Length: 220
Length: 247
Image: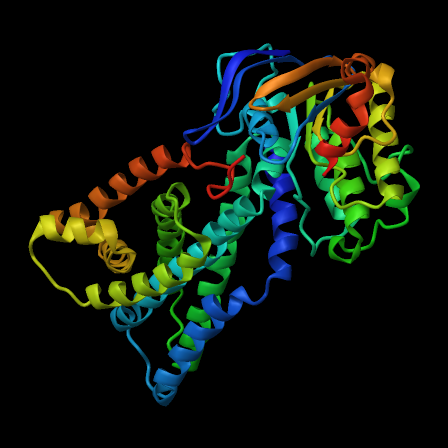
């Protein structure tokens, strides 16, 4: 999966000129950059939900083979966790409610209404449920936003565990704690261009002594 | 089909939690009917009079039910970015639209049936054929109003403008419903934009189906075909992304 020299626009505003980068299979692919550089727009185009994927986006799966969790999207507060899992399970063709690998946090909240859970708990349940639906690519927009360190760690562990099952994940984030360099691919957008596209180890080498200031700027 | 069934079951659970919508679509029209006709409890109301009284209510309940239900639910979930996520989970936006439509249709038909039955009982005028005719009219009009409403879903209308538009449409529709004309073109145009007049004409056509005139058939069929064609075309273009967000 790759993007080759694609100009990324929102309306008539150019966000990224001649964007070229790869999505590595079975890795945690991060799309990073300051707010407003075009990360969400790129995810929207990859998802192709509005039939707007450019021809320069090559070898991406059909939109039916992609799960896309948008920024801040919760779920319906009035329904219970069990009802939500049942729906996701029916989309995946599996029984998630009685799944033996159901995380403890989810199993103890099965009868709770979504509206009564914390932001971190809701996010974890939706992301875990999304990852149980077999798809070729998983997109998550800012999955760690506004989460406390405990839930960030939980989600990070979940992502890397799912990679072991052969999944390919692309997410946008300002969060850099807990990343595993060998399993992480980074695409960095800066100054309306792809500043870097490669492994996390190469990213750290690329920025050298400036790494901390670069990360600090992105995280702000 | 399995996915649609699962979505319908899910949407029913959600709908049962949103009881405030029943105030607009059920309680208010029922209250209006009862207040206006409470004095008629001892009089039997004949079939034709029942239809002329109840058809406008059917029109009102279908329009408010579709706009406040199917349309508003879709718009709200889209503007919260939930529709995008939900579509990727389900795999196809039409499954979501179909499930929402079906639940909304059943809800509208049940409410209309209850209003009609209560009205008939209060006025000692129970008539099963009228009830059946009104249910069929409601089902057909629900489909047509839902398809016509795709114009709202593809437009760049703000969510906050919808209640104002609905109120304006209801008032204008009620004014237009009093218009009588023998001009076929005018009637076709009127029925293409006013779901109230189309409801009354459709109900009247079904009642007189065995001896319907060409005028009556054409004034219902042509707008219906137009709405189906435009609605099914626009349905494919309904975006799942919020229309008010940028990068």
